[in-house]
Length: 464
Image (tube, rainbow, N blue to C red; front, side, top):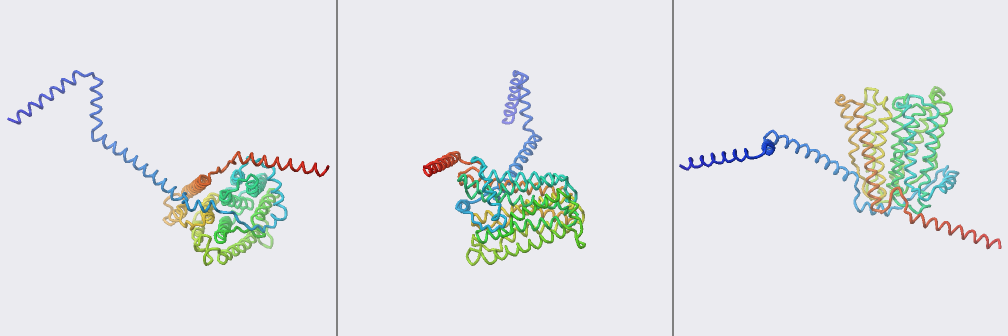
């Protein structure tokens, strides 16, 4: 009896639904059918697939954010100590004392007061970047000969960079805008510039004709620059010897100008059976070893921390780990390669090598300025190890493609690191990286006009 009653109710409900649907317009019926179809299992699968893609990309974004926060964030205590940092250096450079300091003091007086010191440094870096790109267009594998004007513009570019790099600090004192950010920004740009300068030397002397020579020169360049800041991390003071950065840059300028005049073939002539470029490189190698031994003596004997440790009271040996993580994989990668892919793309290999070395050096500079423990590991070190694994497993990925990806990743990682660190430090100091406060400019101009008027008044009194 109950079943009969329920069946009658269901039949009555169906008749009501059909009568109700027949009274509706066709458009509403079609919309109702579409809504009914949207709940089918196939659409549920599509919906779940879309949710999976959305969650996957959300995971990738969160992973990137966490990587950036881990890689590029300084804690509050580090920022405080960096804000308290005072630049300290001993300059014994022969050329600086002889003539270059006078030239730089004269040059800085021509700068407008609105020109920020960090902007001067950045302009110098961009000039060097342009010159190395021009030369690399003609000498990509460091075996070709470029036009004379290409070597000449590289020499002029390096001289301009040297002048700008030497006057940014003077401009900061002149405009009363000195801050620890200037030291960080200046040395960060220098870490990339030394890679560009080394490449220009390799192009001018055609060092690519001798296997291992380009990478050997790049290795000593990166290692010496890193070791100089390693000794600074131990002593708290940057030291310039009699023959240092200025003299080395002038030597490179001379090499570029000499090549532009007589041609790159001059370096292939033989003297007592040895090529001229081999003799020059051996001389530079002996000088580099001598300089390196001097840095090691400072590192192991002159630490200012507890028991001869670093400024952060950490082990003086600890900074050796990043240097080995940078240099050893690239040397293994190049020496174990059975193809000529790295010789043919030596510029790309050196740029990748240089970017990773520059980031390691920047971490060391930050550790010195913040008097904190050095971050030994960085994910940028992973790219050369992946290239070694690819080589070990008989090139699962194309060797050139992997080198290109590693180079792009290394430069992106370096740029993001530098930009975010500078942005964070600027926010902490409440200053702008590339601008000078207008009120400071007005006060400086008023001070200059007052001093000049006082000078004229004193002169008139003296005449009277």
